[in-house]
Amino acid sequence: MTADALTDLATDVAAAAAGPYVPPVQDPDIVAVAGFKGGVGKSRTAKELAALRGAVLTDFEWDWGGVTRGWGYFEEERQKAPLLEAFRTGKTPSPLSGRGRKPDLIPGHTDFERNQPRAEVVAESLTRWSRELKRRLVVDTHPGGSESTYGAMAAARVTVVPAVLGDGELRALEGLLRSLTDYPLLLIPYKIGRSPAAWALDELERLANEYQAQIGPYVSNYTWIPNRRVRVPICSSPPSARSTPFIEEMKAVAEAVDSYGK
Ligand SMILES: Nc1ncnc2c1ncn2[C@@H]1O[C@H](COP(=O)(O)OP(=O)(O)OP(=O)(O)O)[C@@H](O)[C@H]1O
Ligand SMILES: [Mg+2]
Image 1 (cartoon, helix red, strand yellow):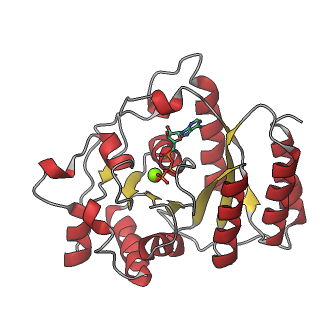
Image 2 (image 1 turned 45 degrees about the horizontal axis):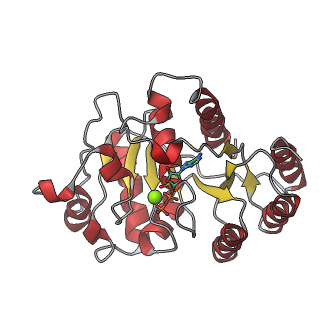
């Protein structure tokens, strides 16, 4: 069994879907990246998608392992907390410029965990920010379900969910699918090895069919990615022999996001 079995699986699941989901028209749109399990690749995916599409990377993670510190923004060196300020005042935040090398950023903050507004407020705010900034937003969320994650997903035209094919990861994925039926989800098989286990592919197919979720193109497992310490996204860096396959896979994901429901 090769990873290409995943490509066939995506086609089969799409063919079995009851009817095409028609997401709300959004221009510019909001894309959320979410998952109930930590460490599955949400932040890497969000950062690369924002880079590929010139979107504003919006960080709802409150841990230090997210895109904000990875971007080079350190809250302890700053006077203001743009995300908290935006929700407190109701004003649209100004994204920090990545100067064309990194995505522009609405940085996350440690205190966001305790200061999250209700999901409806989060959803309404994101929609307004995107409209007023006239920019597409890619929202990276904290692992698990929380008001800010539900709000981002409610506002999003599509939510990208990295699906790692491990036992714990697939159970966490089922937890998400069970509690979030009716959301427009695009499952991205993620960190895929050369020969994904047949049971895991079967389980992914079952979940996608049972919960009517679409499966997009897969992204392989690259052992060099966790060791990469560069702030510039992989897709914005000069391609190398080792990064080119990743960039091609991410570009396919970006295309699947763009064409979702269209
Ligand atoms: N395609 C990939 N191949 C191999 N490792 C990857 C890949 N993408 C990301 N990683 C690594 O996996 C780990 C988790 O990635 P990431 O931080 O993007 O996940 P996350 O879902 O945002 O985590 P958290 O739940 O903590 O927010 C990191 O060490 C990252 O470098
Ligand atoms: Mg993360």
